[in-house]
Length: 159
Image (cartoon, rainbow, N blue to C red; front, side):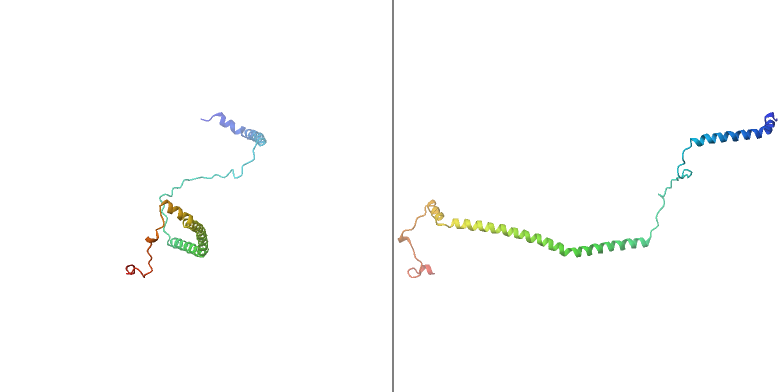
C-alpha cells in the first residue's frame, strides 16, 4: 500500500536537498571555526597481531658454528700474544718489588747484627766477667793447684 508520503517526497526532493546543502555548509563553517590541527599520521592505523613463535625451532647452521670457534680461537690467540708481550715487563716489575723487599730485609738484618755484636761486646767486657765471677763465687786457684800442659813433665796427658 502506497502512502502519500512517498509520492509527496518525489516532488519535495529538490527542496530537501538544497536545504540539506545549506545546513551542511553552515555546519561546516561552524565546525571549521573550532577545528584543531590534525596530528601527523593520524589517518594511519597500526594493526598489532600477537605472534607466538615458541614452537618454531631454529635450523642448525654449520657455518655459524665454525665461525664461532674461529672467533674464539682468534680471541684466545690474541690474549696469549698480549700476555706474552706484557710478561717481561711484569716480571721486571715483580723482580723490582722482590729486590726492594730483600734490601729492606738486609737493612733489618744489619741492624740486628749490630745489636747482637754490641750485646756480645758488653757480655765479654772485663767488668761483666768480674760481676759474673763474684755472683757465682769464682776465685782464682792457688799456685799449687795449677797444672801446666806443656808435655815435658806429664806424659799421661799426651796419650
